[in-house]
Amino acid sequence: MDKIIAVHPEIKTLAITQSNLEYLLDSVTVVNADYLQQFLKLHPLTIVQEQGKYYCIGNLRLFQVARTVLTADTVITCQLLKHPHSDNIRMVAMTDFYLSLLLFPLRSHDAGEQISRLWSSLDDLKNQIMPGIKQLTTLSQLFGVNRKTAYLRRTKPDNKK
Image (cartoon, rainbow, N blue to C red; front, side, top):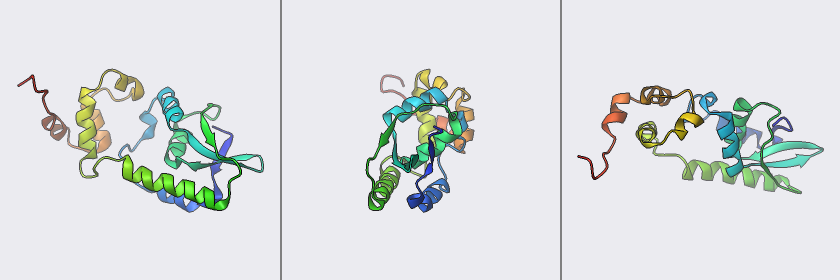
């Protein structure tokens, strides 16, 4: 992690914009570092090298989370864009930013409730990924949703009435 020194200067404004957004998970420190490393393998940062220094240009939010959760000596998988031009750097960053916002989030008005309901149906892996969250009440508080609403909206499987 310590080899990637920052977000590329060409996209600094975009990085500031993204860091000022409000995300569903307020505190990323509840995420287990080992599982975050696994997630980074599935969704690697896109980086460029200039004058011997590495800069992040893609997956900026994950870069911010990784810098918070992982130690500086953590080795992560990255995708290196060779021979970048300023236009390429901006295009990669903007494409990642806009499509990530359009394709990945849940509906804004009930995202916390959706995840709280889903949480109840997941196996014990959830306790390993976010070990500080053992109960739906804690998760609901973290997402800022009413725990009772999350319980009430759970659906029963067809074979249970």
